[in-house]
Length: 323
Image (cartoon, rainbow, N blue to C red; front, side, top):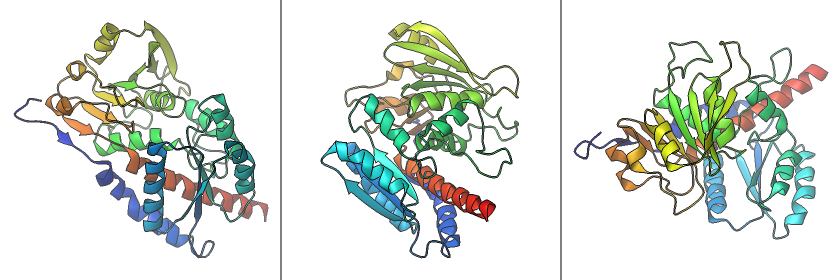
C-alpha cells in the first residue's frame, strides 16, 4: 500500500449483518418453545468500562434480533458463584455469560467452569476447549450434538472468511494453507485458542506475548487432530520483526491503551485485525495494510448469539433422545 492509496477499513458491523437474518429466523423457529424469545443472562461484577460497553452492545443486538437479555449486577463478587449455579438450574435461562475480569486472577478461570456447558454461550467450558484443541466438532459419537467454539476466536475466523482469506477451493482443515499469521495475545480466552484454530486450518501462526514467541502449526497430514507448538525464543523486537516480515495477517489483542503495534513491521498489503477494546494500531496502519478491521465486538456478539441458539438446539435434541 502507499500513502496515496490507503488500505480499506472494514467495520465489524458490516460483517455482523450477514448473520442477523440467520439468527432472526432461528429465533422465530423457536417460538413454539420460547414464545417470548430465548433468554440470555449476563453477569457483571466489575466496573470495567469495556465490560459495560460489551454489555450494552449485547443487550441492543439481542433485543433487535428477538432474544431477551438480562444483566445481573453484583457489587459483592463472592455472590457470583451461587447465582451462576442458580441460573444453570433455571430452565427459563437459555444462555449464560460472565463479563471478565471479576477477580483478575485464577479464580476467574474457576468461574468460567462454574457455567454449565449446556448454557455456556462463550464456549469457555473445558469440554469445548478440549474439543477445539483436538479439532473435535461434536459432543457425541453420533455427531448430532454440535460443539461450540469460543466466540471471539470464532468471530475472527468468520472475519477472515469474509475477507476471502480462507480458500474455499481447498478441503476443510486446509483452507488457510500457505498463510502466515501473527497473533499478539496468548490469553487462554482468545489468543491461544485462536492460534490453535488457525493452525488446525493449515496456517502457520506466530503467537506473541510478553515472555516469548511461539510457532503453531498443524500436525502432520490433514487427518492430524492436534496442532504442534514450537518455542522460538524470548520476546524481542528483532524476533517480532522477523516473524512479521512475510506475515499475511497481523491480529492484535493487547489490553492496553498505550500499546501500538509497530506499523513498520507490517508487510505491505497485509491484513490487520484488532480485537482489543483499545486501538492497538496507529492511524497510519492503512499506509501498509490492504484491509484493516479496527474492532471485532459486533461479530463476537453475533457468534455468541449463534452459540446460544446452537445450545438450545442441543438441549432439545437431548430431550427428544430421552423420550
